[in-house]
Length: 287
Image 1 (cartoon, rainbow, N blue to C red):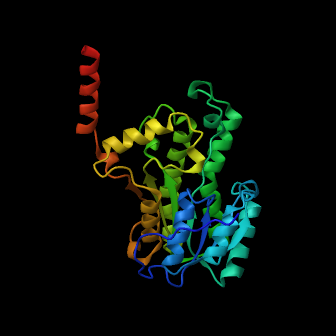
Image 2: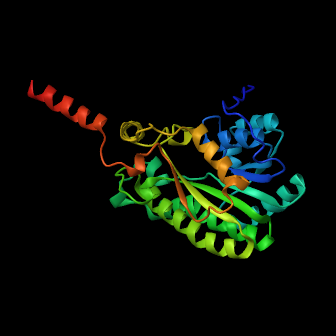
Image 3: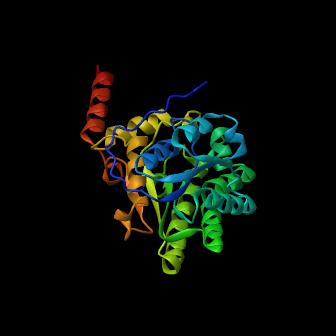
């Protein structure tokens, strides 16, 4: 079945003209990495798409590759040897070193199986941390070892505010996001000094992707954040635009940061909308 690729509603400015990239994590048209690929292509970039062999069985990514005139390389992001192959093959395909990388990868077997945080399966937790956080370190270490990223290149990963605050159902993914942001800061220093490579994370609003459909309580996450944020939840297209900015030369002096693309949620304590909801609920109970 052929999938119709939706173009973004943004104007184009050639912000990424001549730049080469690698995009991890495009699964289907609901994924943030998918939206980033579309925006990056609109802004003039050439890139390689990559995901696990299991994810590639879904086939949608090949339609995205066709529509954006890109290649797909299967990669286990937790295996250093496969990452080495990815960077080497990508540089061959694209004709030079890489200018930007998107790390849009995360999963938690504990969350998928609804295992309570106080009863975590530690083998599952190790998998969560490896895939969702330590994989970024592996990507960066391989790139640095191979000198695969151009000077003043940019690496972006996706995080969530649960790295700093307690969200009861976010389980060991909160631990993974904390580690992820620490890697952004630590590796950001070393890669910045060595090659002026920038590393940043985007703390995104809850976003309705295919990957979160099975997450317990996600709709409550989404509605609560939307009620709190003055601008409402930031959607996947908004996140893609922020990624394009961070990939571009406009952000040359931004590194080791967490950028909150969340409609203002991260600065809020409580909103009038939530207060009114509580008042309405209390009045209903009194009646």
